[in-house]
Length: 335
Image (tube, rainbow, N blue to C red; front, side, top):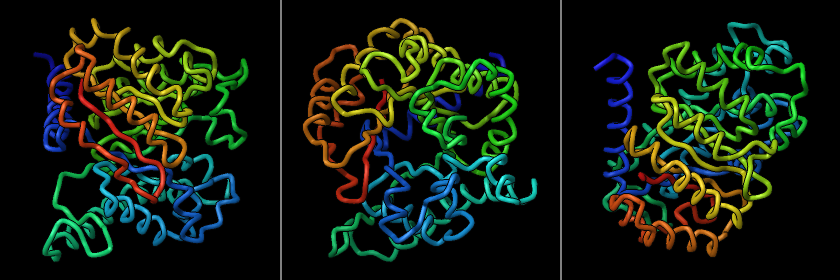
């Protein structure tokens, strides 16, 4: 077995064991900026939620803890819109910018440690005010937003970067950021809101070129329920992720709930043969509005009765809106 295959197998085992301990379904945290604003943060800034790494790191930690106490099994760092280029535009040095990126993961890890301490001091799995205080596996994912997120002009929701932006440009833009986050102590790297096939290819090639050991996921956004927002085929985008042994999960985020079921079904059915060849793939999805019980009930029914899905997700029938009133819930399952 080659070193690459061994690393891929090790990463696959990590997420498989994790999901098994979670009962087949892991709950991801939710909208970070929304919760920061609920705590009083002013995010009117091109850095958006990453601004709080500079101004209010205590609020970042508080939001992570909120999600853990609401039952999240995976928390994402506040680095979605944090880039070296963005920090430098604010006047920070290269060294300071790199430190802030790493700090985003450190804060998430600190929140996990604080949470575990609270669990040890608790006499039950739930506090009197309904908080979940249960010792369980928790993963920290380093969030990586698209180039469009850095532009802060809405292009992560269109995927339209212009003819001047090519594969080399995107790889060079993201390279150092991905390197730093991979070395930060995160358990996973979450490439989020990927709006087009070109950027998906850039992320996958970076993982290979830099020999990133931290396993990753790719999640795309859609506005028509068929393609990603750029108009590129979702199936083709998902296939790019599946082609890379370092990518453990492919899914959907920032997409209207009414589209999610068909999109997940599309990924699952279209790439059944590829998954059988490379082993288990994890599906993930992240809603973009609060309290969408109906959409999630349909998805749970699909997972339960679609025979091409692994039996390991059957315990997911007991999954409910674990994020309650603390923002947008999400989940990932083993298929």
